[in-house]
Amino acid sequence: MMTGSQCRAARALINLKRAHLAEASDVPERDIEQFEHQLVALPDSAVQAMQQALEHCGAVFINEGSAGVGVQLKFTCSDAQQVEQMEDEGGPAADDKVL
Image 1 (cartoon, rainbow, N blue to C red):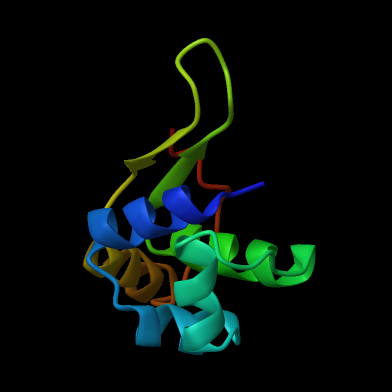
Image 2: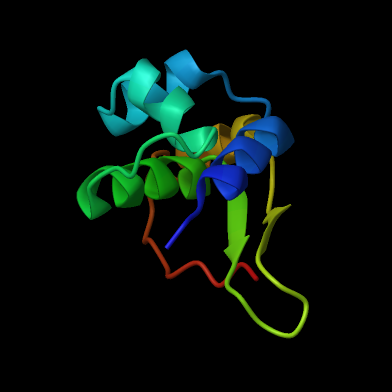
């Protein structure tokens, strides 16, 4: 599960303001701020909603392993929007296999 530090780092990588994350995840902006500064523990459902919103915009979360936890950039939010537009143009849809 995503940590507060990962949330803050992911927002920075994809250049997403807290207000936009709050809107996309339906988690209050103040709760996000406190979570990022490790002042509160949010319900798992809220953390998952934020993580899904960040992943949708191109953040990839790295679980704890030999190198520790982290986050990296998959693609930018504008790239994701362009892909969505292309997918909505019609024709048969296929599974995305983006790594």
